[in-house]
Length: 461
Image (cartoon, rainbow, N blue to C red; front, side, top):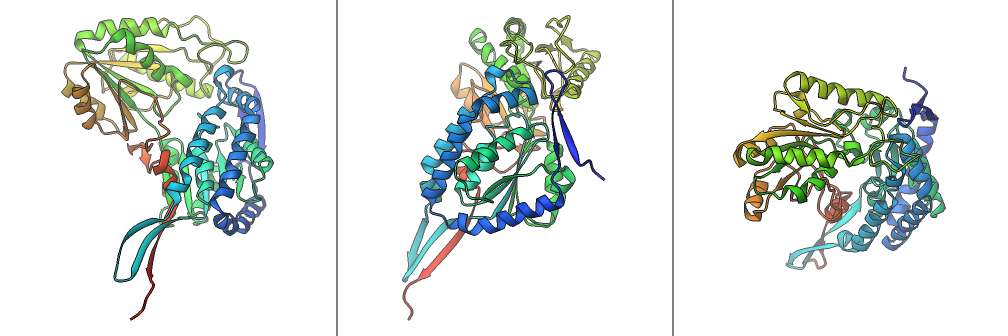
């Protein structure tokens, strides 16, 4: 038996911020009935009508920007002044609606002997979109807007840490004039979600979350032939070559390590520094880290608030302690007092190597982990020595050499002199344990469709 409800504990002050019931079987079946009733009409609706609905949905979400930001801050701890994600959602929506006609247009192929050939992008049907908590509003661009544009209907399961975002989104969709059953949200328990996936109730499952969660989704879908897309974790490396301009790049590296309290799949979690500049780099990074203030995310304007849960904060501290017990050094001062048990001060950990778990397991916290390297070859070997492969970056003044190194990296996205950026235009996704499939841009929108081939013979005989 699983619980019939769940509680959101705010990392800000450990208060019970919200309590919600899990969907009952009756609620689940009613949602499926509404989705099935709406599915065919939505798929056959003219593209311009679908685009009008998602554009109105985006506008309705922007009108709720303050409510959404408050919900983000109290549910995950990001400072309120950084918590409005509706601008990102709006940009994603605007870009996708702009090229939807191009991406979804019939694609002609060579014909001969009176035969005309083309492929048409078709909606797959009912999508289950499972959203992570760390960017709970912006992620709806891929998880909701993209499949709706393509003519699919969507049931959203948001993280139990951020259920209010799903509720606000459903309210906004209704205000936008979205047809009943086209977009719904259910607070599904994990066992119920897995059972529905395992029963083949969905045409596709779009999952953004942890590797452990992705494995459970993938296992649940085994044998159902459900189209599964998994965007999972990362242990993203950066390599600082000896010719890098330390003073200019250190602010970007710190941003990559500490933004959103290090709770991004593309956060910089491993930093390999050429031995010749190692000491200068660490000194500069420590100085930059001191600019990253931490405090109550509502009562002031700190750079960082708490991480998502007190348990996560303790896990991060334990990982750092374990590394230090093996010879690593925390080279930034530890604050005498923090506002609560979920707060983790940003720090620089030096003297690391791959025998330490902190260099192998996803940390998801505001810690810059530094290892000295003696050559480009060693750096590339260590960067690829990971179960993950989401993003990786090279920092150098030599663009040609940097490009050569990028080609050798095992990652879905590689950067030269940039990091921690999910590009709206390029395909986004990873290799190894970082997932399967791609989102974003034209490739991501096309991925929400099932191409159907047409072979038209207009004359007989």
